[in-house]
Length: 157
Image (cartoon, rainbow, N blue to C red):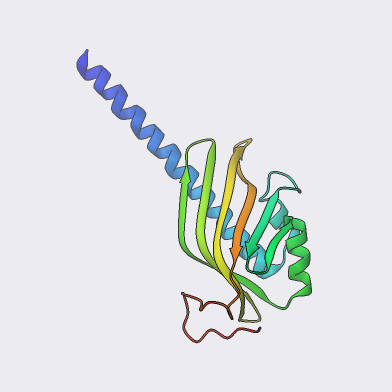
């Protein structure tokens, strides 16, 4: 009897680990799609990453707080030149219902650093799909502090 209980406990923990691993991989895919949508300016694919159009999208920094939305961010990209966001120190924490992604980032336009800082997303698993419900970030201007992940990075004031 003891062997049966031990086998059930071991197999149960293995199933939980598989679910967590699959969820982590699915969240990593959200991160990759986010980065790709910035580069390609693909609004339709970008908007699929969010639970709804209007979510908490807040940046805060030396130039004050900025409140926006995913759609507003995509509009901003259409005004800028070629953009990308570099991610560093990515960390994903989740269970089967909620997740949090944190990382350090650098936001570039035409290969020039516009701002950098820390970013945090909260996600939920909605109908089997991981969706972002909030994006919060600090905004450090490169002329106020050097960018820690690249020497000689060009920036505009």
